[in-house]
Amino acid sequence: CDGTMSFSVPTGNFGDILAGYYAKRMGLPVKNLIVATNSNDILHRFFESGSYDKHPVQATCSPSMDIGISSNFERYLFYLFGNDANRLAKAMSGFKTTGKLHVSEAELAQARNDFLSGCASEDAIMGLLKVWDTQHGYTLDPHTACGVHAVNVLREKMKWQDIPKHEVVVLGTAHPAKFNDAVCKAIGRQPVMPPALAAVQDSPARFEVLPNSPKSVREVIERVLKRAPASQAPTLRMVICGARGLRDADWVPGTGKSDPYC
Image (cartoon, rainbow, N blue to C red; front, top):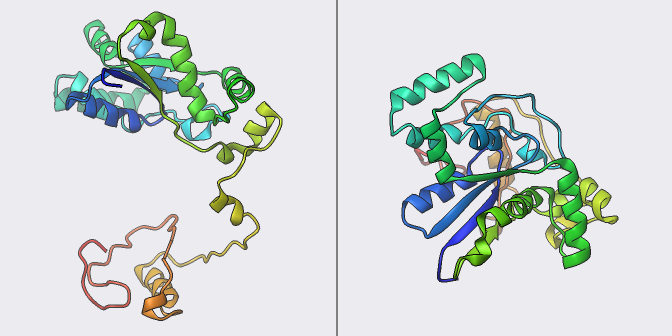
């Protein structure tokens, strides 16, 4: 494609598509940025009506998009409010109190110029998974299906097919194996796992519950690193859940050296 492109982005927290908005502002030849939501549609409702009102979160087959408040959205509002930090602070303070945020007609018009939007119901998502499997031999995941649905809804209105050298890209934001039950229900079989993920399905789970302190985490890291010679030291992968205050500027594992970013 050597013309413009449009991007449909499955989103709940408005992160990926905000990056696209920044790229467009910097000069990337983007025609349309499409906000694609599931039934938790606070973003879609905003671009439809100018009302950013909090609703109860619904459990869906695309759970990483089950977001009641989009944590990155206020970053876009800063630009929509003319870079007025005071206006933004007041609006977000009111939203925190009331769960409601409304913009003017002029601001809504600008927002619609910046973004299109679409919302996929559970039935629409499951239907798309089945259609893409039978007609295209491709296994969609429920997140990406939201992006495909938004394109299908907007295609006739936007007439992208009539724009010379224009392409529409749907961001595939997850792997179908992450949603085994939903995909299996839609297409009648389990999705194929990536080889690396399939290889560890029967592996034992290894974890430790540690006291919430820098000392305890430090001791575990040092113990793991000492299990093998330095030339054969394993790659260390750790997930620290629920930890606070673990920054320690005077310690680098196994060296005693200081690292201000440790």
